[in-house]
Amino acid sequence: MKTILKYDGSFEGLLSVVFYVYEHKLKEVSIIKDKHYEPNFFDHSIAILSEPKKAKRVWQGLSKKLSPKAKTKLYKAFLSETLKIENTILYYIRKALSASVSIENDFTDSEILHIEKTVKKVDREKHRMDAFVRFQLTKDGIYFATVEPDFDVLPLNARHFKTRYADQRWLIYDLKRNYGIFYDLLEVQTITLELAKDINRGDKASIYFTYEEIEFQKLWFNYFNSSNIVSRKNIKLHIKHIPKRYWKFLTEKKF
Image 1 (cartoon, rainbow, N blue to C red):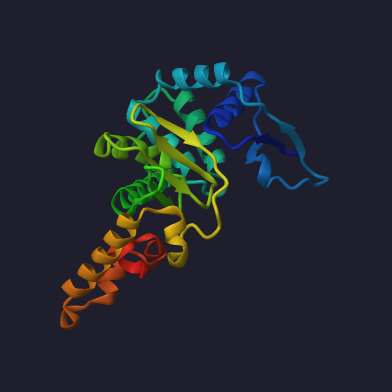
Image 2 (tube, helix red, strand yellow):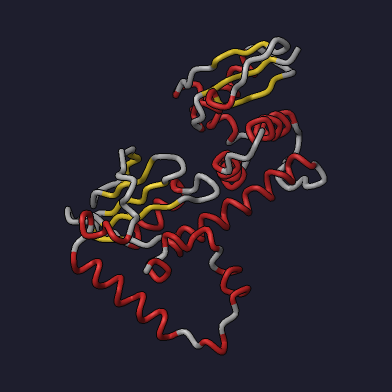
């Protein structure tokens, strides 16, 4: 009978699970987020609490066997939210800690290769968010944007936007995961809000955004359309560089 280890879905929580596995010398386990767990008669489940001290011990302990780059890859793989990625991460950690040589580039191992491929997908999504986020100036002076990335990449975007917009207050909100990152001119904080359902509707823009912002968006939309050369339009290439799932958040596609 396999032991199911449930956790809160945070990276700290996952590292706490890893600590528990080693502390209790467990072999056959499966890790799953609380919200995804479905009870059954055949498995034994245990809820693992997130414990910062234990998570920190695991993360620091990994430095003895993994490079900073490899540790970052584990974090990025976690942010992918891919099905059963927690079990792949546990496998990677177990192999790294038990091996006498570095396993970081052992791509003959399908699990390690899976981590590598997953990280590349997350990196690609992170860079797309850097490029495709479109801010709108709210009436209370905050540059606001909504996104719905395939992966949970906002923690990776924070540094880019803090550096690029260091003199502005801004908020990027992930509608799919219901949280955002807010920069208050000093630091980036993670926040949750109850957003109005119509905040992205063009006919309601005047409720939330400044008049100058709305006029600027119309100007940009008109410029974008007028600069297009119809005879050179290549929709397939356009979609390749800017997938349709991003269009609803782009100013040049709104009106």
